[in-house]
Image (cartoon, rainbow, N blue to C red; front, side, top):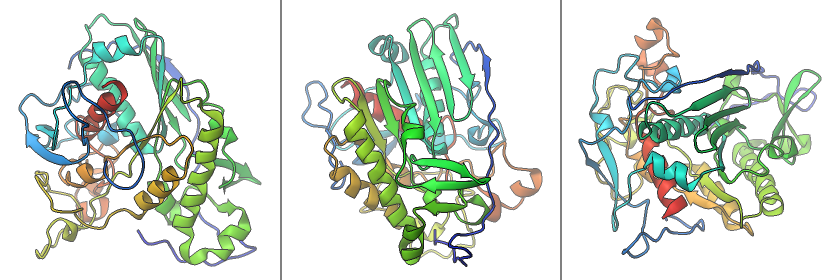
Length: 388
């Protein structure tokens, strides 16, 4: 997305402030069964196989999917496509097949047994929340109905506990990873500060980070009023979105290199999750009147290259990860997700009104993903990289 034009007054931009009211509640739920590019990452070695290229392959139909149902109670309305009227279900019937290996299905009991007494935390924006909810549902699908669970919802931290195993799986909302503070009632993005968020990540056994989408938001969707340092904002107005992302990621990278003991904490970074708002990117040469992913029901089975424009955020991420002393494992879901133009909520989201559903070109959500759906594959790859 293009960065918006800006008129400066007193060296910062006047934009709408997004305020999120904290709400914390605790309930007990019983869930029933209802590498790619230049960034460094370890490549899993699966039993009896050579090094596995997890992120190069194709989508194949598999009738054994999905592994859980949309009745999984942790799924937010904005991701629950089947509950909100999506008429097709073929998008649920595909699994990712890497080019040179077979990967295991995620087994909930095995996951919890291996992680007994430990913690997993997803940190980032709503794509991280998408993955967090998927993982909870996938784990729970393999457990008996009598399994004891607990969820504590809050902002910025929500935690799901599998009480019989002492395992917690959390989501910490930090769309930019670096800190946002309130200064004179306005939200200020501090590119060089991260302690306010980072304190919550210390001591977690498995950390999975993501960021990217919020750096390109504009207008009323932009999550901050101004950026500190102000001089950075003024001097780099024509390139600010990616330079700001680079600077914020380098602050995060220094924090990880300094504060995380990688002998006891596994660190992952999720690649940029692509959007599908421009049909010309997957219908090359075709004449189309559509302006969104609405109506897409099939994935791209194979591609000779990246379909559409490779995300600039991913280029920034790869550069920063490559500079780290302790680089995380890059869960490089970008290409395989770009092939899934069919897997977004589109208009089948609990966040939309009937009027919005009637106007998909302006209202369709082609950023997030249905659950069950594509994030289940992200978690199968996460499970593989973590244990195999």
